[in-house]
Length: 210
Ligand code: ATP
Ligand code: MG
Image (cartoon, rainbow, N blue to C red; front, side, top):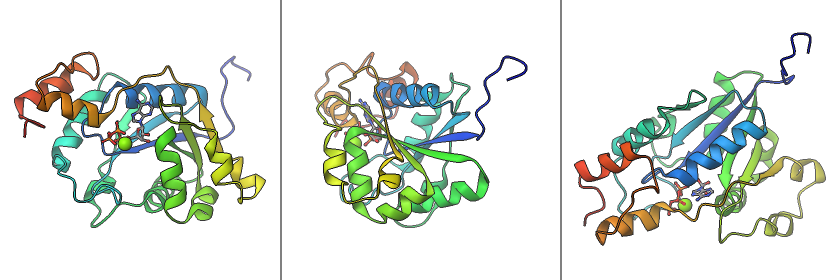
């Protein structure tokens, strides 16, 4: 620390996966807080192509979700976006994404950022032990979801692996994409729940209107 700047030994990158249909302030606040608290150099938003647990639901096109996410992060120099999952054929799995990112960011430490609801979903889907060998997880608090169940449900894992799941307290935002879509359908306001550029895109492209 000769020049007064704190430099972590390892370079850290955050991955923020999601459907982002649409992206909203809950996503942005969770990513920003995790970025700050763990000293990440950047956070890559990765819209999913066909989330394995959401197939069958009518979601916006990948291009529309990519565009909304681009607009949402444009004012944050730490945030960037990847179309890796959208370009990949078939279903997206976190383990494939993490491994692909490790080939690009060789030697970096990877932190996969999720909300309190998604962390358990991801870690109970598949390859939990392999996943935790590849990267850390950051579970952001989310209203309505209890983070304490993690230790309970994943208690069979070794201490070393459990230690790779971190939590981050974020200012609580009870915002969800599901609620935003429903609000649009019902003609209720979505202003202040998501960036204005995303709101405009939704109305211009008549998304979620039935
Ligand atoms: P949907 O209602 O369609 O499931 P969502 O609002 O949950 O949408 P996703 O795209 O499913 O958004 O979420 C992507 C990631 O962001 C997940 O890890 C999720 O837990 C997290 N997340 C979403 N909303 C919030 C929020 N308000 N606070 C903290 N984390 C959030
Ligand atoms: Mg969700």
